Image 1 (cartoon, rainbow over the protein chains, first blue to last red):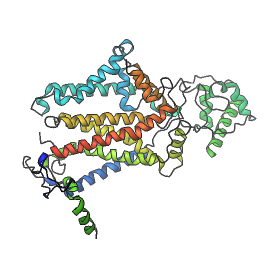
Image 2 (image 1 turned 45 degrees about the vertical axis):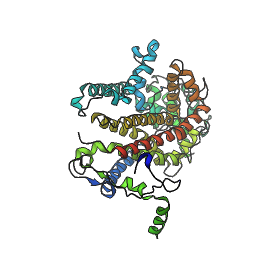
Image 3 (image 1 turned 45 degrees about the horizontal axis):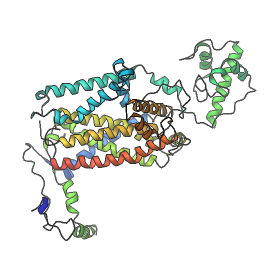
Image 4 (image 1 turned 60 degrees about the vertical axis):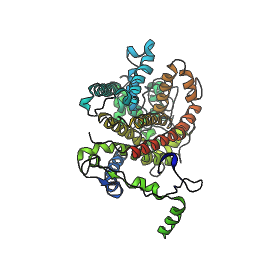
Length: 260
Length: 224
């Protein structure tokens, strides 16, 4: 007796009384050539794994993991988004049939049916045939599910300006605020035109922080006059000289911040 | 020398069957891309495991610097990202691995699904696999909060609001996850950290063990 209740052990251990060598499984039911897992197959697998790892590390090196500014619960203007693989569930809750009074449909019933169906697939699809053509209903439901997930994800992601979002939320370490030179003639101009939105220390209030930006003086001049993104044009009104002072002030503050 | 040590241990503990069981089996032709390149679809399960190993290792190194508290979480990640040697690479691997593992799991699920490989006798292993998928999504959800930056914070606020909206169990679930019925803050961060680093990985390892044992017991599914 090798298996089951009749097994005999040495003493009270789990070591079997009769020493049986492991006999590889008989794969004769599969036609064609088989290959030993160890070491033949594993050596090829190792190569495939290495190729994958190289590709993966290229991705890692090319795109450093994003980090935004520290969590600020008072930032009411922030557009909240989940990680990309939850976007389809998030998007679902935006439709009328799945929000408000029907919230439960979007939050529980539809995802529950989809994922419950996925989990119980072996019991719902009980036919003998394995080929997709032999189980049209199961396969078409799955294709419909995949199409919905892709479509919902696309709907959620398409209207988001990812670059602008990342740009607006660049990480600025708190506490490392630069010394603001309030004597600078540019600061007086700043006080008049920019302070109400960008804050007394350039830390950002309604508008983003002006510390840690990478614009040149000319670009800053242009933005101050013409606006950018949510910032309307015409925020600055003054002379050309004042505009130059303002731009120089912001640039020098940023240079100072970079040195620290 | 090594052989002698091995024999000494083997004589007492009988360790040969343990690794022989893993090593001594034949890989059938229909799953071997070396015979037939279209068999590459069978790689996705293994790649999922590979990325999971990357996640475990990079995650272990991340916890050497990460501080799960709202004052220092973001700062520790920023420090890791900017000051620590190779910190950006390790965090990058963990960040991108989290996405790649979902993609690989998705492809593996599709392979098994469209081949009908979940049919008798492999129903149980399919369920275990779907549970692993859920655990991975949970790991993604909890890990997303840990850097404690704006996107992490607000995504979690929304997630918890959705959880709260579910009748009867909603508020309890929110309190359980957030540590408070109202505030998303210090307690939420420590709870998500504990869930991400201890609870879910424990569940993941258990399920993966079952997944692999079942594969060895039942063998890989036959050709179509």
